[in-house]
Length: 481
Image (cartoon, rainbow, N blue to C red):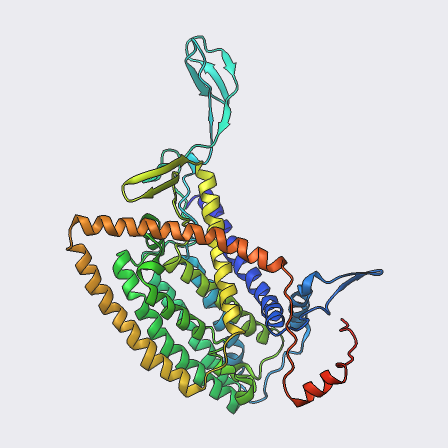
């Protein structure tokens, strides 16, 4: 590995880890802000930066910064009879696998350094020009004719140029095992939760650890089996190959819709959030397996949970939502085609295609994080027996049925002939068109809804409310920060 490759690797690590930490911190604010909007409350607004008479509140974002600082200065308490080594090791085992999991997640297409930009000599009448030492030289007279100009060429749709330098994968570690590495790292979270509960010398922590271990093991079975159908269709366990298949055909959610919902439900259960937050149910277990933790050790557990939301969203986007792919955007530019008919084609510079892909990937991840936050504040908590029954008697059989159905349909489509293949290709292109419309309409609708003031319906419920309404309503002072 040369110096350039080392620098690129460091840059990729900084991008992924920086995104993970920043979005994880932002999700703590989203939880507060979104819950206040859903429950019609004021929400976070007390943390402020005061400069004279001016107060900067930034819509409650300073609460997240205040919490981060507070964790460092709170007392680091340890129960007297706790296992000191394991008690201190558990938060590390909870956070490190989440960070390591991002190593195999591709966040953009392969970069061809020689095709990012070039310096070329413009054609000149009567001169055969050569580029020598940054100058355009006449090949006959050897005189300097002009200076080269900078161009941003388009790449080839298939294949990467390796003329002057090796291609750069926008992936920290492009491993051949791909999704298998993801499951290996995700399974380590069970160890952290179990050790935390056992080493705390607390019966509530131990019960929370037992719940966490059994819940995570149960739903990891469904999570793994739900991806078997996807791997059958993609023909690979490498995440980057899965994304490229979706770019050439259609997004995974259209060919594996059942697997998408099964994986989404299992991913929410793996992050131990409502409606699956049984390992840390406050009404039953105080706070579950990290009841005895305080200070930054508690902060590591707390923050690892939010980072798990980001990593699970990355996997959902990679496997089912096209990864860095956008509808009709290919490595060489935009090509709008339905079946064998090309309606529009436009070459785009390679550097812009890469930028669009990276922005698309991270934008999709943010959208999935928002969806998980919305689910967290919309559904009630299951009972523990309901949680286990859902995993073993509903999701597991559904994942097995999905594997069977996928195998049957895959074999039938492969042996159906060219007419069926053409129809499937037309359907795949139509799904890309549908996605393009949705990606245009939904953001505009969201912006419109955000800036539109809603009228609140005044509804009187109960006899006391009716009496107060008849007396002229209740008198309340305005809410103060």
